[in-house]
Length: 292
Image (tube, rainbow, N blue to C red; front, top):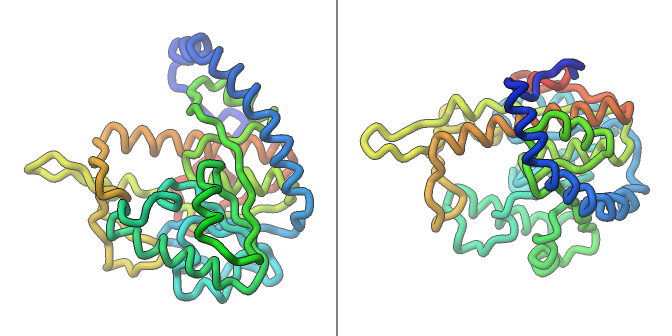
């Protein structure tokens, strides 16, 4: 990552955050440190071979050929629900989205089938796989997965999305985990903490902002987005993962996307601090904090 990557656009605003986030910063360190020690211990037997982390961007489909033989594969979210996943047999899977531990009946039709199939395939897997989940998902995952080859590991996270660039840089020096902002960011963090020396990223397009739409009659927002498993002509009108939840407005959508880019910069700093070589090998990506 560029050593001068800009995390704040105003010195005055950054100073304001420095003051307002101080007690949250102390609280998060006190809470996260014991969890981090336990988490590192759970990673001690992970192989140090090169790791490919696969995002959900449309570019992944044409980039899968870049995966080298005998490399480790880290998949995320509903990768297991895709028909060709068995050709890759991922070593790791990360699921941090609440749709994975919600009641299936709450899920919208756009995600319900793929979430259900993910659990079906986890129960059918005939190879050992480590599945990383947040603590609140533990009970549901244990009730839905009865496969002894699946090892569940609890991943800690910050509960607050820090804005102060000084605190973000200090947190990176302390190896504190990022918040549950983006599943690929969490996967990168896990790879770094596993002391894997080389990590390559595929499918991290991060171009959803181009698909944000507003209904010109109702002002309701939605996404017209192509997932990596779909063809370029099969975009879907996506409103929300949950049927009983209102669509977020444009301000919230853009703020979340901005926060994701910030935490990509954070794991890039973490990689540098831990001498882990991270490269973005996606053929198309807006992430500008990770070297190509």
